[in-house]
Structure formats: structure tokens, C-alpha cells
Image (cartoon, rainbow, N blue to C red; front, top):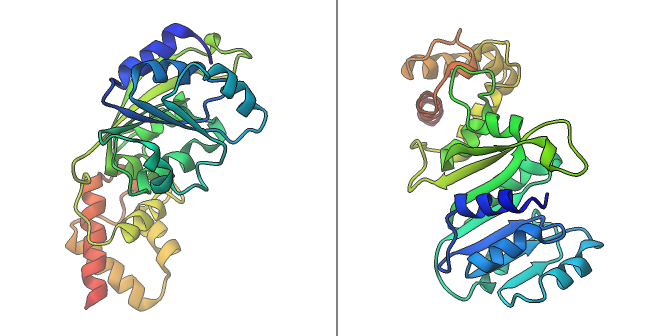
Length: 262
């Protein structure tokens, strides 16, 4: 996507200035990278495609504040790579994420120890809707919870499919994610919290109780542990996972941990 007005809107949405360091994923031919280089202090771009490396070298030759890493961002040590930034300051991720790998890239960055202040990313509108979804909606699921645990999510604007060449079948959205100072909810065990939230949506039409049994097992002791925890968290086991808020999932997760310790 090379539409200048939209590229400028992406940079403006991210509120990038000369105090900002930027990570870009999948720079392609460097259209967005050029806008980022002009606005930011430094840009660190990760490109996996061999064919694009010489193109990027040519496009970005006027800029001395951009480093292109020829590697898969899912395989690099982000702490080591970001040593490139020569000044402290907020790190923002700005990217037009490949549709087929949007979620793994986002979760990889969020789960890293990097102090990411903000992410402004283009993705399929449907995925953006899922990430920013509220409880009780069809779009709400474990992805919504996983991202909203770390970040405040909002859709900045829609990018119509007509601006792309070749034209895809769906519209895109620019999603803005702002890092929370602390996670949205306090949980005793993050790993178990995310296991719980995933389990609640394995079979969306099933009750929370059925999904929990499928994940944790149906032995008598396990049933008793689940029943006690649900009661302690004041959550009706007949509800569906999509009706539970982050706070309710946290309550249940903490109850499961407390009762496990007994």
C-alpha cells in the first residue's frame, strides 16, 4: 500500500516525533518507512523477503536513521536488535502487518520485555474488530482479552480495499494500541490466566463449564476444584465465555490458583 495520504495518516495517528524510536514490521518497498524516517528519531525495520532487501537499500539510501534487519521478527532477539536505538525514549511499533501472521507478530511483540509505548498497525478489519471487541459481542474472544490485558485498543480509521493494488476482498483498519501502565487486571499467574481465557472460547456455543471440563479434565477432583472456584468467583458455570469481562476472567483465574494451592 503506497497511498501517501493514508501513510501520512498512519504516522500522524502514531504521534511520531524526533523523540520517538520506531519498529516497523514488513516494510515492503519502503513507502511507509520513508514517512517514518522523516518523522522519527530512528527506525528499525524487519523484512524477511530476500527480494525486497536491495529495493529497500535503494529507497532508503537518503536516510541515515533507518536500519533494515533481514530476518523474521518472530525469530530475532528484540532486546539485542533494539540496542540500535541510540537514545532512550518511547518505542512505537508501526506496521502494515501481513494478514496471515498478524496475531503471532502482535503477541510476540507484546509478550517481549520491550517497553513498547504504542502500536499503530494496519490489519484486516475483521481482526481489528476482534481485538477491540467488548464482552457480549460476537467478535469478542481470547484474542480481545490477550491484547486488551496489555493495551487499550481502538480503531483509528478504516482503509478501503479500493486503495490497494491488487485490490483485496476486504477492507483494512488501522488499529491503535496504547500500553497500559499496568495490566488491565491483576492476576496471580499470567500463563494460567491466558490458558483459562483460551479454554473459554474453544467451543463458542458451549457453556463455560463444558469448555473448562474439556480443557482441565473431568475427574471428580478436577470437577470439585472447578466448581469451588466458580462459586468463589461468583460466576455462573452456565454462562458462555463471550459474556465474561476481563475482570471476571481474572477473578476466576485467581480463584483457580488459590484453590489449587490448598
